[in-house]
Image 1: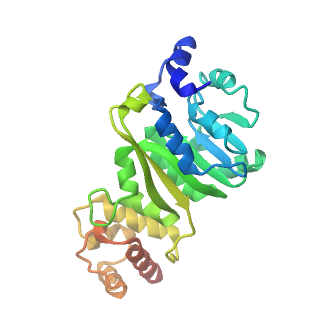
Image 2: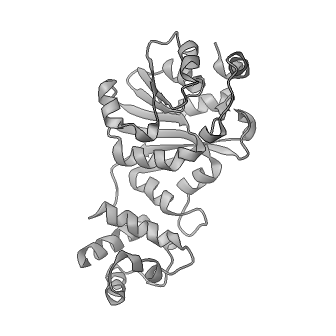
Image 3: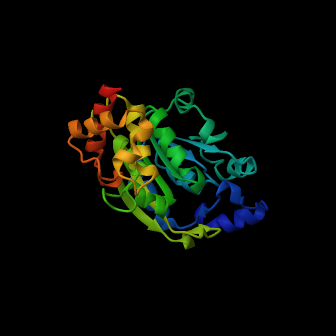
Length: 280
């Protein structure tokens, strides 16, 4: 059964009411669905982790291509629906939980997952915390292919000195290589969201910059973008170095203290954070 084309009927049959608080917009466009799964490059050696399966449209397509799908669903009303729509797939497991509270590494071990690829139509409200959690906590994940709000996607793929370039850009580029897959207008979902969406793929990699203290590195990045119009010298005062020492750090890193955070590359942020680390 093609679930995408049957979504309205299934929702009606189960008298399901969409919860705005959970960001529920179910994908019903088969072309976009195919592009998501194709770009994720699933095969019989890979396992997929899905967050927010809805009624199982994406889950079903992935299950036909990969070794195992583990889907995390927070809405208890969807669990019996998924039990029916995915009943013919013995390589799918539904975990009824909040993905933000799941210990991913423990889950991977318990479910015997390896060669893991995260593939999801992410609820907009959890996009950034979920991506951050996967990057920093989930071991063994090879890639993240997700449908997200277009505005957030543009921040992930942004270049320095553009309005979309910021802390999220640098987080994504530290842990992965990011690529745009496809845009999805509101008509691709029910109910129609008020904004456009985009699928992006993040191929996980070892960081290409040498950072002596990741916590400090990301704090410097965050502080640099908290007030985008401020110079770096003013933005980084909360780091804790006296003003004269902070000026020394900029000089040692070869970075003009009057620049703004949006103009620095990830390599420059790494250099600056390492110099500040040595001075603290």
